[in-house]
Each structure stands twice: as structure tokens, then as C-alpha cells.
Amino acid sequence: MRKIFIASDHAGFDLKEIIKKYLSKKKLTYQDLGPENDKSVDYPIYAHNVAKKVKVNKNNIGILICGSGTGMNITANKHKNIRAAQCFNLKSTKLSRLHNDANIITLGARLISKKNALNFVGIFLKTKFEGGRHSKRIRKI
Image 1 (cartoon, rainbow, N blue to C red):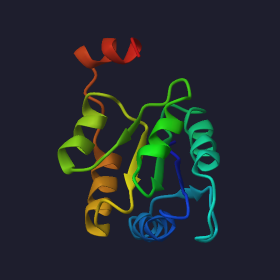
Image 2 (cartoon, helix red, strand yellow):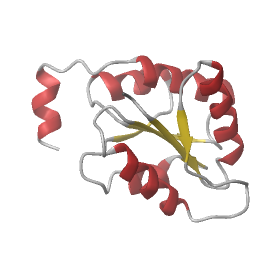
Image 3 (tube, helix red, strand yellow):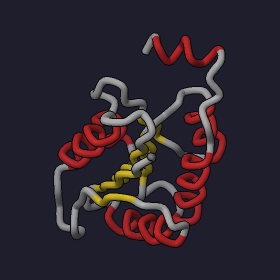
Image 4 (tube, one colour):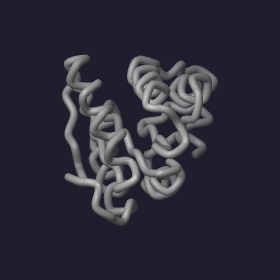
């Protein structure tokens, strides 16, 4: 069974709350790993927490949001078997799943619109890994 884990830093907090409403509306179960408000926090703590939860099961998915999406992405990718993808348009989002079997999406709350963020999350969640020639490449990461 797939579990969705979501977290942000202070800059991504408002977008995280919007994404949570979207997930609830779609009747998708998620676990919010923080923070609980928009007070200043250190993003690596939240990125590490999501990465640890995602790597427990290959079906788990993570959503991380910070100001640029970059800090969360760098931090999450320090974990073995995590393939976090910083998504900035529809094509990058779809390809991150199709070709890279990304298991965490990172979003930059200061760089993308709320509408685009929700579209990217929707695509990320519904797109399946193609496998085939991409599988051998994933094993080389």
C-alpha cells in the first residue's frame, strides 16, 4: 500500500497546506511530517524525515516544499534509494517518474504557482515508472 509523506520548511508551509487539502479532496491518505506553522525552521530536518519514511517501502512517495525546492532536493538525495526530483514544469515532473522512478517530488514555493504545484503533484502521483531500459540506469545510481 502506498503512503504519501509531506513536509516543508517555513517558506513552503502555505503551499504544503494547499497540497494537503488537494490530497484530502482526492481522498489520498498522507502523513504531514511538519512543520506545524510558518515559523523559521531548518529544512534539512524535514527532508531527512521524509526520506527516511519513503525508503521504508518502495511504494512510498514523498512531497517536499521549500522556497526554491533545491535545499530539500539536495538533502533528500543524500539517502540511499531515494530519487528526489525537483520539478518545475509538467514535462520534468512526468519524466522524473517515467524515466527516473523518482519517489520524492520537491517543489519551490517561491518559484512556481499554486496551480502548477497542484498539477505537478497530480502528475507525479499518477505517472508510473516505465521500467525497461530505464531500470538498468536506476540500478547504476
